[in-house]
Length: 451
Ligand code: UD1
Ligand code: MG
Image (cartoon, rainbow, N blue to C red; front, side):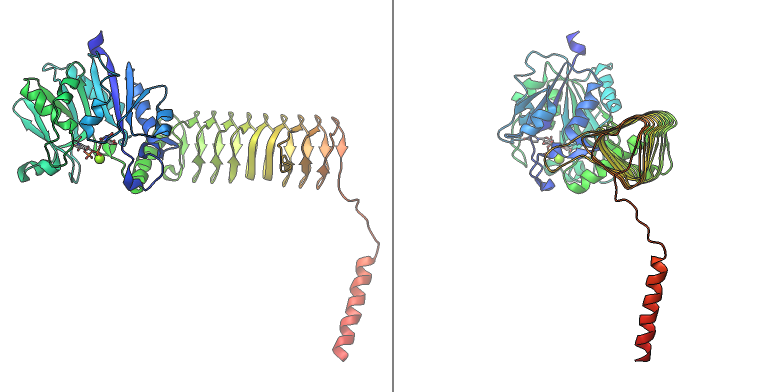
């Protein structure tokens, strides 16, 4: 039914001058993705039939981040009511509930939005439901004015009387409005107020004057944090990180020291994963069951299969795939390479653009020389191969299954399966040379003392 449908307007036309940034405010990242995408993800749980973002001129990056949802451009920033007016053509004829959200309030939860929709469906069927909250410091927020019939008005701080400023219940900015009525009220807004803006908040008073009920639900201050500065961005990051840590633990991962582990919005951890202190997950990491990630690892764009052991001090870069029960140890960097099941790369190694076959053992200090200053080349190491310590594998090169490479080799040609390749200076030995050298030096020193 049309009345049950939901449409969403995200207000994001503000540049966010206090961010002191060349990019639009809502493009700043929290847990690895733009704020506006957090918001879109939250509303997607409500299965909205339309979503439109109101952006400022030249904000192509925001339009791209919001796609495939629509964007409309607000050329002059004449207030939140004026911003909503820009979405009128896109939502013409929509008679369900329109949710208005702010792009710079990215932490709002689906639960709060659902509570607002529930309130809309309630007995009095309020035409406008506002998400209110009681911040520790109500500061400059708009105040919700209650009456016997529920919500009577929202007054902006600058327009409020002393008595109204004493109200602790504030406007978060989030509203759920009867779509059949919203734009009628928006058309009637005036800018005759302290800021000379068209306030969205004035629709509450207009709805009441039309005899419509209005209501509010209360959310937690933490989820309604607005991001206007880098300091607030960091506060938002901390809140999101805590949510992600909690979710990881609730889903069966052990975080030895949760506060020192940083997740990306899309990090996926299997069951019985143990993550040690000081581990950072960049975007695009997926970890299977029973994996141990020891302290001080950095993972990004990587897949780790079940039972693998990573770190301490390992770096997995985009395209790293670590197979079942494989080991990647300390000071090892893996980039765009597959370490197949049971293979071991335990110490001080760079593996880039490569495959390491199942069960292979890569000695300490091995380097795949994948770059010649112009192009990237592939190293293929066969199953069960053994690469001696401090070897350089100059790509493109292939080490056959079960082959061995002597320590300290520079391998420039393919090695046949089962063979031994040694590519280093031949060792020479001169019997007695050291003893002779030492006695010569001792005689020299004795001569100098006499002088
Ligand atoms: C608004 C509310 C206030 C509430 C507060 C919560 C109004 C009139 N006031 O005030 O009651 O307590 O948010 O944070 O709504 N925007 C546009 N175009 C515009 C103006 C704003 O897209 O012309 C966007 C901004 O980018 C931002 C949001 O709307 O995402 C809120 O605008 P802002 O100027 O921050 O409103 P406040 O003065 O904080
Ligand atoms: Mg604001």
